[in-house]
Length: 162
Image 1 (cartoon, helix red, strand yellow):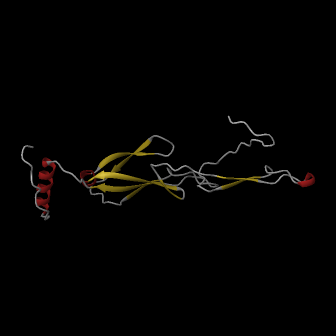
Image 2 (cartoon, rainbow, N blue to C red):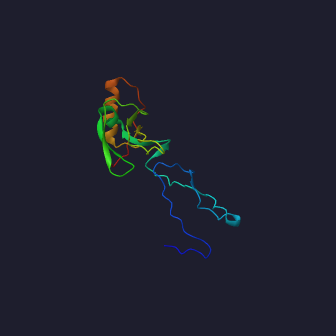
Image 3 (cartoon, rainbow, N blue to C red):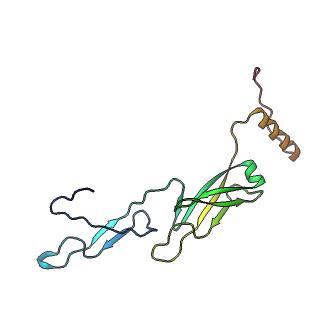
């Protein structure tokens, strides 16, 4: 550990789970000694919570943005969703799931500070549309559009020798 400079002391602080960035914790009587024998003041510690790139925090809830392909959203699938404490949970995505659909997983968010229980883990579906298609993928998608009666752009020009 780091050494403590002369005239300073080290204090161990237990940070409760569920604190938000900027939360101030008061350690009663752990501050500077009072003048002429008065009791010591309080020490305030401000928490700086490192964000987790997998989650967006919304109070006690956590949000996970789940990218799905068009076929996965249309036909349904089962996905692994990461959990804050590690590991993951399987979530069944039903057929016909629309972009922006949110699936709450109860009690898998952040521990509620000063209260019992936990927030929720909310899985938001983001449907990815491919930007580049192989010739075979484009042909399959055009056939699909034709069966649905959807008008689409003209076929791209194919290069010779491919």
